[in-house]
Length: 367
Image (cartoon, rainbow, N blue to C red; front, side):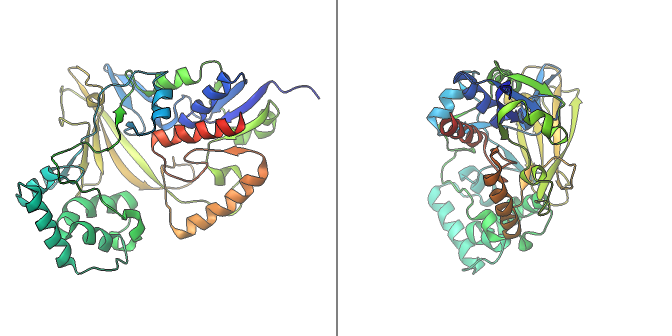
């Protein structure tokens, strides 16, 4: 038999597939990377509008404590000093996130950590909850009813499409609470946005690989599989196996993006809308991620939505039923000889640095 042209066929040109391709190429392997979309970078894809880099599939903020991942990515991009400091809008009043001394002052008027601790303890004691049976009780036990109703309930209900009392407690085992005036959402020492957006970063990761876009692997499985010695698959694991056990459940997101004739719409990159009556979960103002100077601005309203086959899957619904279903597909994957990796293939929500770490670990194992 003739030797195959490529060492690896990588299905998916997102961050996992691109990072693996870079590592394999550096190791002297030949990679073919395909994607059913017409662009690279997966959900981290950015494009330019009015001189502003727009995150087409929602905000992506790189933050990490993993020094190896940070050093790897800095080979291919320079990161700016963006710090994620979102603001919550509840009935027209603004609160800082994550919960910190600014939030406590805005909500309760307290000015010292001692006052905040005392008020929070009082709120927790008034709940009388010892063994939370659902997400609502878990959140009230952690931060009290007032903060829950203003900043947690409506947002979470929109995010998951169900009342909080119908959601399992484990979804919100803890809520970050800080007794400092620190609005930085993340604790990681490294944080930022690639200067010029994520698409150029992924382009550099893919240098040396052959890239084909608009190609659906599952519709051309036999022909494409014949081109490479090994397959790395980053798509939905249940779709790969033709939903033989049924479909895993996701939440999806719908975006309404528009260009506005103003230089500054909301003054922050991320604003969450926490009351249930407002249909969208947040508004992203893209220019603030890269401190772009422009006479116009681009915003995206995000609407959480139920997922159906054909929709873009965003967040896995990690309940017991889906965990059991994924375990069946995982067992098939382990027998298939195909390498499965990334958010969709592992049915797991990953931060961006964790996706890169998974690709690096797989590369170390295989290469």
